[in-house]
Length: 136
Image (cartoon, rainbow, N blue to C red; front, side, top):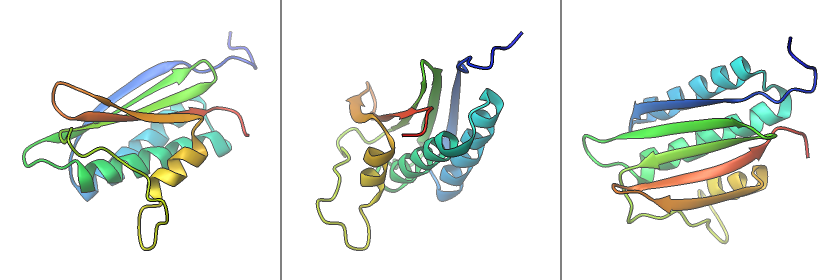
């Protein structure tokens, strides 16, 4: 029997081609997974937007010919942890101090997440963000 106050738990991992189509698919599949976990409303919208921004960055700035990017989400403990991994470890994300025509993505991620960061991998990097499951 499911409790009304239960927090959904689970893990979602997916590899996609490092293309604009792959980035769109990452967002669509993340939305479906959030729905399957019972995450709805503003928290689901925030997590989906974080996935979309990080996937777009992975495709634009982390692209290496012949390499995919990976989406990973974990749900539990009152938050969704979103991770996007790509093959370009030397290109670390830096929020633009004063974006003009671009550079808003990481500012948006920072506004929606309680924390975000970058960690290295044996090949490439992982950009992660923790999105709360409650409205702030």
